[in-house]
Length: 330
Ligand code: PBG
Image (cartoon, rainbow, N blue to C red):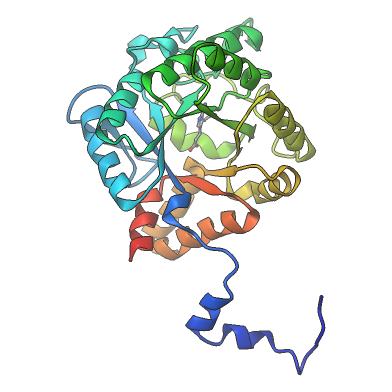
């Protein structure tokens, strides 16, 4: 309630020095809010840069383990793993996705062995494994829902058995959360958590990620028949409601900054743990402007993170997690 007005009320009093600004600050970014997405490649002692994502690398498992040890030492609570499947292992049905000895499962085991206390979040979707780059099976140009869900269940179970803590389905097939929950529970994996990419939009901001996992070259068409229309907001509420009913423990909204309104609506309505994905294209835009000297990287990335917290997010997946953690430690 506003109980005074100018000149007796002067809002600038509370902005007059650093200490008072700190005292009345409403939102904070903590290292424990940060989830670091990482790309893993086959081989040994390999570190590859990604042209469209400056300062982000793909690592072979041995080097990735070292990076995760450092991330853990900085206080980062969890990583999100994305595999780059060698092209000769990509097939139309994406069967490499549930091979218990695939790159993802080997990475999970190696990281769990070396850093048992960091959370491992794994992506469930077929696009890193399909020759056509889609997140599901295709028949006559149509992405098949229910047959895809069956494969996603196998993929999720394989990841859980390898030691994943949090299964994060990013495929946007209908009914997959309930099916994955039932599969995990039936197979003694009831402690494994589900973070649903519940409201994932068919966005133009994923381009650099597709370069990073080398799926852009093979993708025919777009993902508009399964990812959401950026124009819709009520539909996001519907997606989240269904995923919660089906057993999702946590919800993700993706992309991040263009969808802050969705984060706020979801958090206000459902009051469940809600995460934002500051995606590859958002990171690339910011990085490119900073590399040109047009923006200050540290300030701009921190302001971005605080905007997620202000919107209601519990935490953020961001490629800048290491930079942010270092800045926050100082
Ligand atoms: C695909 C997937 C995508 C991202 C995460 N998982 C891209 C897509 O849907 O094509 C994008 C992440 C990013 O852009 O940082 N299952």
